[in-house]
Amino acid sequence: MELVSGVLVVDGGATRSRAVLVDRAGMPRAAAVGPPASAGRGVRDLDLLASLRTLLARVAGATGRVAVVAGFAGAGRPAGRARARRVLAAALAGAGVEAEELVVTTDAHLALLAAAGPTGSPAAVLLAGTGSVAVAGDGERWVQVGGGGRYLDDEGSGFWLGAEALRAVVRWADGRAPEAGPLARAALAALGRTDVAALIEAAPALWRRPAEVAALAPEVLRLAALGDPVAHDIVRRGAAGLAALAAAVCRLARLPPGAGLALGGGLLRDPSPLRTMLVAALPADLGRVARPLTAPPAAGGAWSYLRAHGLVAAAERLARCLEEKPLPG
Image 1 (cartoon, rainbow, N blue to C red):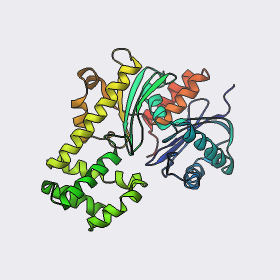
Image 2 (tube, one colour):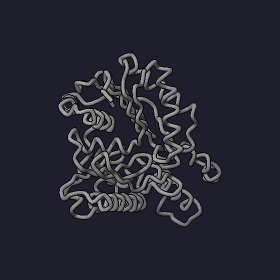
Image 3 (cartoon, rainbow, N blue to C red):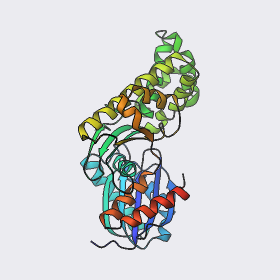
Image 4 (cartoon, helix red, strand yellow):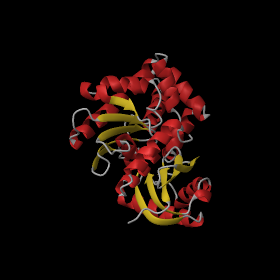
């Protein structure tokens, strides 16, 4: 199919969303950041639709007839992908965007495409944000490890760190872990609570609001950096879990020697105790090639689509544009 006027990429994450419109020459025409737009379980269709409408309103005025590539948290399961496609199609229609083609994948896949770069080189990416997941391959053929969600998986993620902090609150309150006092008090303050019994009663509702639990992660990291032993142990265990994800996905993908490991997501984007401990926990060969993910996942979706339509020079032009002027947010 011939590429139309351009490609609109939507990156729907559990923490925020992003959209970028790129023309067929590889020039960014519009970009915006919006509210969370996860397609995961527990997110209502109406809430996802509202988030996408807010995001698209910030870029839709620049669009014409475009191809749309979208990656969503929670779209790794067939039901989540189908729901994301249905709700996105409604949001696009409401925004007046004429989608010539609609491709829906996961937000982790978009991140892998960004790690693969404009040439689509084999790579791996480890993501730790509200959830955690690792993917590896060349962008077109890829494997995933982790991403099973907060109830069974997501070790080392923001939700996992926050949940471990809340468990420390309970152990501190009943006397099992008096050393957890600094972390427990910080977690309660961050939640605006003082009553541990009420917190225990509220736990099921909190687990349905993963971003609220994940918002405790910065306190865990702050205390770990200050040497708090309980926070340090939580971060150490989280880093070990993330390292296991990365090692497993690289082994399963059979990446060639020297293929990069990109570290992305809100928890690994900037220097922190988690990133430091993660790199130390990685196998030596992976530790040597681990680098922060510098390109936004939305750019990966655009690169992949341009390459698929034979516009390699346009993909490379987009990479140069983003080096000179990064996307907002």
